[in-house]
Amino acid sequence: MEYRPGIPEHNDNVSHQRPVREFFQLAIAAVGLVLITVWLLGSAVDWAVEQVDPRTEEALLAQITQSLPREQQTDSAQYKYVAALLQPLAKCVQQPYRLELVIVEDEAPNAFAVPGGQMWLTTGLLDSGLTENGLAFVMGHELGHFAHRDHLRGLGRGLVVWVLSSTLLGADSGLSRLLSPSLVLGEAQHSQARESASDETGLAVLQCHYGHVGGATEFFLALQQTDSQRLPGLHYFESHPQLQARIDALHGRAELQGLSSADTVALPW
Image (cartoon, rainbow, N blue to C red; front, side, top):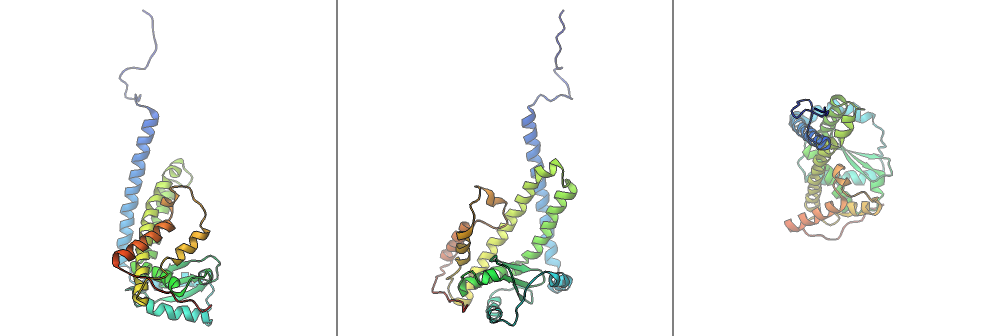
């Protein structure tokens, strides 16, 4: 009888499935587990944010925000104009902070809702060619972040992603490199939802202050002129929705609510 070597038909130590198939099954399960963990911890962060008193937040973060680099020209005519505009806009939104306007010397057009109630506007935003209405929309958007306390949620969720990525998975491990995109994807989708909600607040602020929503899309249209081409699908991993998607959403929201547009007001500089 001739001996022919071979793998035993029944052996618990030998897989009869295809290795590639097993790999993808394990990868999908791992990604699903990570996304569920991010969602659970993110929900815990959202609950914790609601428990933090805004005055406590101001006291805890005052030293940090004061130490950040910035250029605040409170005596300039431009600053006084924007500060005067912020006051009536803030009355259109229920938010718990004692707002402070900060002008930051930066060529990039941007705005930030900073923990503790500081609204940062860059000089690049003020000099980007927006009308007063367009600037008011951006400020209304940031007021939406304050109302929803998105700045604290973003800090907390960012910490969750960092801990899961570097501590649990290992900063330089192969598993970390495999699962990190799913961590980024989960947080990016939540961040995009916050941005869309604040866009709606900006639209409501325009309607409240001016009686129309003219200028709501100015900032996004301006950004489209300088926005570089990205690979298809990359926006899913970004913290902000696609510019055209935001423009379309604003038009759709205005039409749904029967909001009209009218002439905008030019800034005096």
